Length: 76
Image (cartoon, rainbow, N blue to C red; front, side):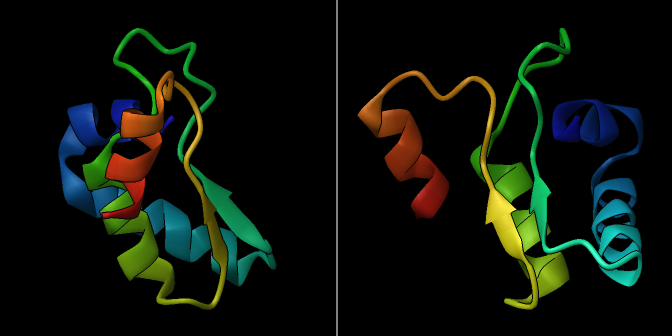
């Protein structure tokens, strides 16, 4: 849950989690399920995750995206 990681410790824990996923052989990283009380995907979490994997893995924004505007915000 990216929102929980950001709430717990700021940017670094989320970035570290993405790097661990990459080292473990993941093909992509996913923001969240959206079920955690701190929320689902956010443009900030997508930006951090994309920066951490730098195109080497896919990034899936998931959880809390309800409208086209929400989806577009994840791409900007």
